[in-house]
Each structure stands twice: as structure tokens, then as C-alpha cells.
Image (cartoon, rainbow, N blue to C red; front, top):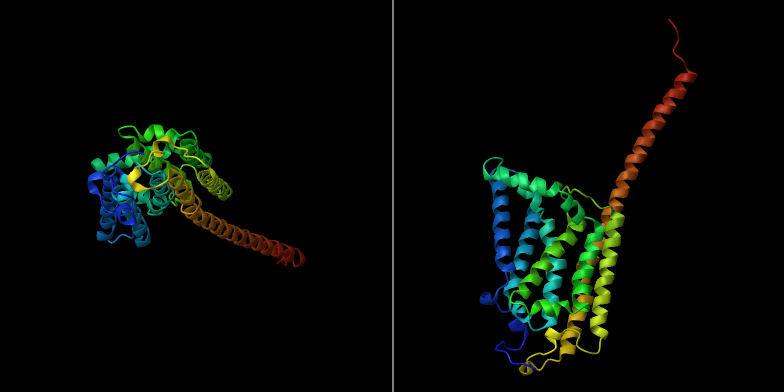
Length: 309
């Protein structure tokens, strides 16, 4: 047990606003929010349409990103594996969908001026979207690899303990969580034109595998009878918290909090797949009926040939 000046992790302390210990993702959230709102206002001021629900989704994502990086839970993530896992789940499975549903890429293309520095920004955006790197990152297998690496690989090897003790280790982790979550979520949530559009079958497999990864990860944390992470095994004695209890809470979060967004993706994917199939079926039926009418007209013309003058 070691001593610390940080008070025990009560609900009030976990939810307290601690700007002096804020993570780098907090100012990133502010910048992203300002740029997005500026683009939306630019379109609205010129009587051009932009979705209010998408704007609300993006704003909620930025607010949640700011809070997870500036509340007390960010400070406790250096001491409690449960706090770190909570941050990870939020940054990987909750924040990215909210941001992506806001269609920031489409807003960028519609609100950026086609002259001056805006022209350079648009060229860079188009180049990035069409690059081979973007195409490879959007492969459905990448999302599975990201989830496996940042949940199973990071913790099962105790690599998390090696990183968290570095001077900027925690900041490196939260940036990895956020970027990995965005890479994994874009193929599942984005409605923007992408260089690679995964099929609904691929999305379904992706979601199911990620659900299993979270479930296995949570089960391991819950069932292991000894502390797994060296950096979180020596909690302050004044807190009166058993490292195994902390570890079990992290496992419970993986079983519950981490699974809910993926279940929503699963439902949305199945719904969109069914809607797409209904549209395709109706289109094919319409084409079939049209071809059948033309064939019937042809048969009728054979039975009643036009009279010669």
C-alpha cells in the first residue's frame, strides 16, 4: 500500500470538475466543438440545410469527451483500473458513435470555402479520404484487431502497467483509446461516402466479435483471483479498497457499459439490412412486373397482328 494526496474515490470526487488535472482530450473536445458549430452556423446563416439531430449528436459527443477528460475519474484512472477501463469504454464505444453520427466530414466539405486556405483543407480532406491508408483502416477486420489489441492485448500482457507509469503514459493511453475507437466505429456508424463501404454481413460479424471480446475480457477480470496489473495492485491504504474489488468493478463495466453501444449497433445494423433488402426486393419486383407487361404486350401483338392497308 502507498500513500497519496488524492482523496478516496467517492461518487462526488469521481464526478468533480478538476481542470488542473484535465487530460489532453478535454481541449481537443473544445476545438472539435467550436469548429463543428462554426460550420453548422455558416450553413444555417446562408439558408442551407444542415441536420439539427446530427448537430445534437456531435455536440453530445464533444461534451462527453470533455467531461471524461476533465472530471475526477480522469485523475483516478492513474490509480484505479476500474476508472481507466471506464475511460476506455467511453472513449472507444460511446464518444466515437456520437461524433460520427454528426457527419463532421460531410459538414467540412459543405461549409469550407473553396478558396484560400479552405481550398487547401478540402484538397487535404479529399486526398486523405481517397488514400490507401484510409481504405485499409476501414477494413472490417481492422476494427476487430483494434478491439482485441486495446482490450485483451493491453491488459492480458500487463502492457497497461508499463505504459501508465510513463511520464505521459496516461495521455498516450487516452489518445490510443479515442483514435482506436474512431477507427473501429467509422465502418459501423458513418453515413458519409467512404473509400470502402463494408457489407451488412461484415458489419454484423464485426459487432458480434467485438461483443465477445468485451465479454471475455470482463469475465477474465471478474474470475481472476489475484491482481492482474502491477501498476494497480498497490492502492493507497487510506482508501480501504481491495485491488481485486477494483478489478471486479472493471470487469463488470466491460460486461455492461461496454456492451450496450454494441447492442445498439447490432439492432441498427439488422434494421438497416432489412430495410435495404425490402427496397431491393421492391425494385426487382417492379422491374419484373415491367418486363412481364412488355412480354404480354408482345404476345398480344402476335395474336392480333396489325392489319395491312
